[in-house]
Length: 360
Ligand code: NAP
Image 1 (cartoon, protein in one colour):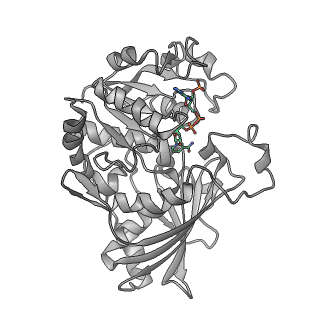
Image 2 (cartoon, rainbow, N blue to C red):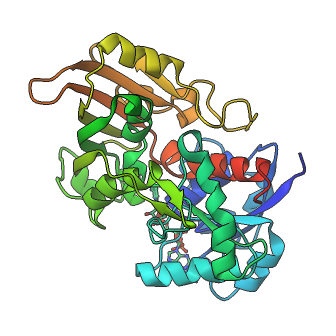
C-alpha cells in the first residue's frame, strides 16, 4: 500500500488533536499539512496546541514543527499538499461549513468530515464502515454533481449514535420497530475539558445544543438507508426517540437503549448475533479495524465509561445489561469513545476503507 499525505483541517481542536495523535505511527497515512482558524495560523503546531495537548507524550515530532495554515486563506496550498483531508472545523453556520467543504472537494481534495453540515445531503455517504460500506457507491454520483474527478465529501455520523446503531444493526433481521436511546455524553464531545467546563462538575445538564436529539433520531435512518437514484433513501424504521444529557465524564458516550421488534427474539439469539457480528470491513486488512467490534460484558455494572471506553483502542463498542423490559421488548446499555470511534478514529477507518476501495 502506498503512503498517503493527509491534511488535518481543524487540527488544533479536540478532534483534530486526536487525528494527529492517531496518525502518529499510521502505516498508510502521514500528516502533510495542518490547518485551523486565523487564530492559530502561522504558529508552529506545537505552539498552537500548547496548553491544549492532552496526551502523555508530546505532539509527534513530524507534526510539531509544521506551520499551521489558515484553512480559508491557504485553501489552495492545503489542497495541493495532500491526497485527502480530515476536516473537524465547523464554521459559524451549516451553510458556511457546506460551502467550505464543497470548495475543497471542487479543488479535487477528498474530504472525510466530522462536521454535521453535510450529514443529511443525499449523495454524501455517512459512514460507519462496518455497517454501510456500500454507501461509498454514492461517490461517483456526488462527483458528477460537483463536477469533480477526484474530489468528494464523505462524513462521519454524530458521535452519540455510534454505540446504539452498531448494537441494533445485527438485530435488524428481527425487524427493529421502535427505539428509545438516551445518551449520557462526555464533555470532550463539546470540545471541552474539566478546566474549560467547570459547570459540569457535580452536575448533569439535560441539554446538548445543535439539535443533538434530532440528529440522534434521524441519522441512524440514513445509515440504514438504500441508494436509490444516486441518493440515500433513508430507512422508514425504526421510530427513534432520544434524549441527550451532558455528564461529568471526560471521554465516552454511554447510551441507555430500549427496543421493540416485529418478531421478539430470545435473549440468547441477540447475544449470539452480537458475539458473531462481522462487519462489512471484515477481511479488508484495514489498520484501524478493531479485532472485535462488539463486546458484551456479563458483569451487572458494566460497561462503565472510565473502564471501558478504550476497548479495542477506543474503536470497539462495549455492551451490557441486556434484559427484558416491561414496556419495550428489551433494554440494554452501550458505550463508545466519542473522540475515537465517534470522531477521529471512525474518520481514519473510513479513509482506510475508501483508499482500499480505490475512491481515494
Ligand atoms: P473544537 O475543539 O472547538 O475545535 C474546533 C477546531 O476548528 C479548531 O481547530 C479551530 O481552530 C477550528 N476552527 C474554528 N473556526 C474555524 C474557521 N472559521 N476556519 C477554520 N478552522 C476553524 O471542536 P471539536 O470538538 O474538535 O469539533 C470539531 C468538529 O467535529 C465539530 O463540527 C464537531 O461537531 C465535530 N465532532 C466532534 C466530536 C467530539 O467528540 N468532540 C465528535 C464528532 C464530531 P482554532 O484552534 O484556530 O480556533
